Amino acid sequence: MLCDGLGHGRVAPRAAQAAIRAFHTSTAGAPEDVMTDIHHSLAATRGAAVAVARIEPGQRRVLFCAVGNIAGVVVTATSKSILPSVPGVAGHQIRTLRTVTGVLPAGSALVMHSDGLSERWTPQALPGLLEHSPGVIAGHFLRSAGKYHDDVAVAVAKGLW
Image (cartoon, one colour):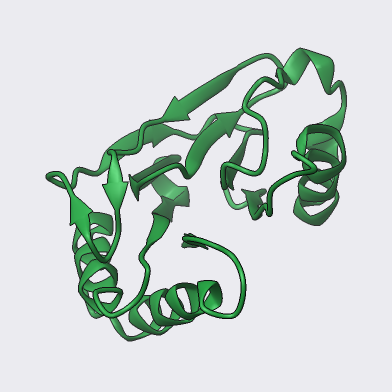
């Protein structure tokens, strides 16, 4: 799960903290059902952009559900496959939630990031990046594609499939 609470200052982290609690306490299995639990838990906050991903390594797939401007991307050395998000704000107004399925090719990585990271990067401009650990990959994205005027969150998963 990746969450970007709306706004800045002391109030902004409240939505993220509520989303984390809802994620950990949800008994739902499908990402859209987990997202529904998160959505309800954020009603008393400013709201947030949120993504929930369930990686199924045995099937080499990811189930992804997102609201707002959180990007989900499956990256290989030569391609990136975008996992779509629905418009809205978790905790306030969202359209019908839907889970999309993405294929996880061998050697690929799942990257989720907030709007503080530009989406203009290409895998070809980052040769050898996927050979590194998830932490190094996330750090590289922060350094090379981060927007200096906005906060940013990046989560990277790889090597499980």
